[in-house]
Image 1 (cartoon, helix red, strand yellow):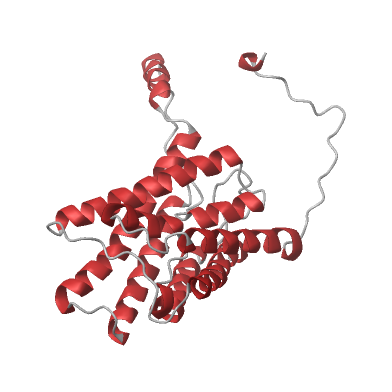
Image 2 (cartoon, rainbow, N blue to C red):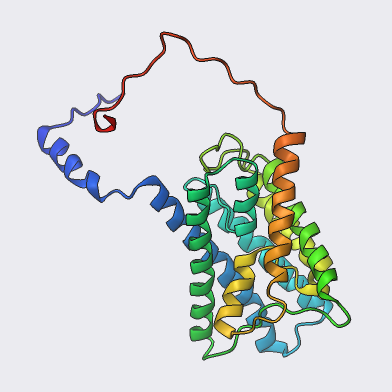
Length: 270
């Protein structure tokens, strides 16, 4: 076994000089959400672009399967790459569910929402640029589907998605918003999203994610029925967070602090 290296004064000085360059935890988490959401939306909306480019008709069983698989794989990857820094929400509805479950502060949630929306918009802008100006498809209601039907679908599908986030342990031990849990969580989250697209895609597109719907709506400037893709996922995510956190999850009693276990206050806190 090699002996450990002793840090020199020069190395200590270099480390101290670089400390101001390290971004705060909240900034790193928000940047992680922005990048992960952009990766997800680029691949997810890009699968629709590619399908339309080849066949001009995306409303076929094969097309639905391709889009569902692309969403499942892209979401699993996006959650996996962001979970260490931010918990891998990649979805304002997931963040809202964690806010309802008191797993994240409102200030951190608002930061995540801004990052997720910006990431989605950037991804669709890049797609439009790379495709030669092709207008994003976005989300629309199927033939004969009323807004109330789509709203119920979005509530149910997003409930299943956010409940999976909780139940697979993706947020265990993350009261501050970070991610713990098992390695199966990103795959399970991606799988349930893909399955929901197979079930709800023909009816309303199965967004389950306000950011996923917001990016194409803004870039393509198509706001018809857009409120459905906000209200439905937020209701579903909030219900899932409340049910799991306050009913299903085992409540751990907090031990009273010891009388002599006080920690010294840092100098900058005086």
